[in-house]
Image (tube, rainbow, N blue to C red; front, top):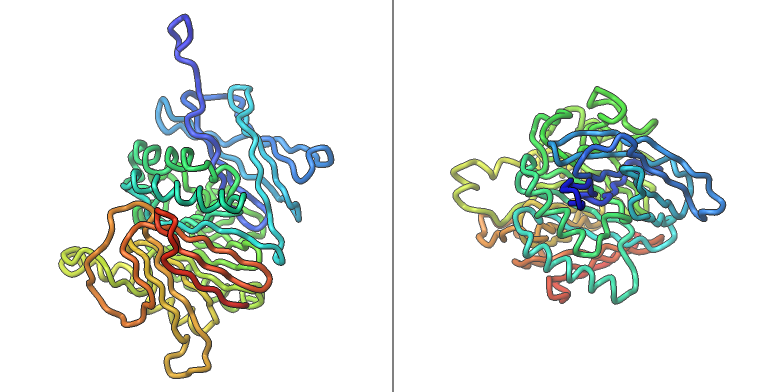
Length: 400
């Protein structure tokens, strides 16, 4: 409030950046009152050598005190650094930078899921995450969020208290580490329509440039509603929408699994919120409410394709604890190569402690909160799961 009793406009949410295709990024921020001149300035590599780009922000009024702005950055070509500065009320918001790694460099990926409805534990996990990166004087190059970032997409308080505020206080990595977002059952309603109450994570709808959800927001990109492709260093990641099985998604999955880009990638990864093989859940919801059937198509329809087409790693959330299994792709053949399934649903939500199934496959089970540091380069994938005290609870590596 100023001296005359007038409330001043302020930035409510600093920019959050998402990957949006190999050469594009999506940035979203929010103010407390509307700004007619909101825009974003971006440039690549050395500021003195790169030309500046100014993009007018897309505006969306959430309510009278929440005003959202979004911009797509790109194409950025082969730039190793992308810098951006959001502008609202004719004033620049703090400048942020994105580091882009080549396939032969080490790419550091922070992997989290299911922080919804658990901000206190999420903050403890984020403290451990900060300590992890501080020890190496580094930050994550990207964040793979495997779903359920909030409890209720229609409650603004959940977005602020369960996602934005903890991330801001926990290092602010979301400003410069692009998020690869995997939709969870709490993040979106099943209609997948543009105005579905999803306030901040609608970057894969394509609604910024088109009215049709099946059309691409990125020219020549691979965007089909919420399932899409992300390339991070030497890893190629297929992101699937477990809540909306469709013929379109199945066709996309089959095509991408067989594509030259996926098969020639050093590491082939699938990220889907609901795991193919769940062992822990609430028994009543599992059996009486039929929640055991939620992700059956992932196991029965998608997993045979994962195994057949040489997927190395399947990353999921949903189940609120940690499990990891490394098994033969073909149970009938010892020479079929291995596939690893990892459940990483422990960023803050109430834990799942009761076993409802036993698939006799998991090598490691850890029933507490955690995060994962995933690193890839042109030779090796390294995986390290840590608890909120910073202790290693599981680690493995393999060569591509």
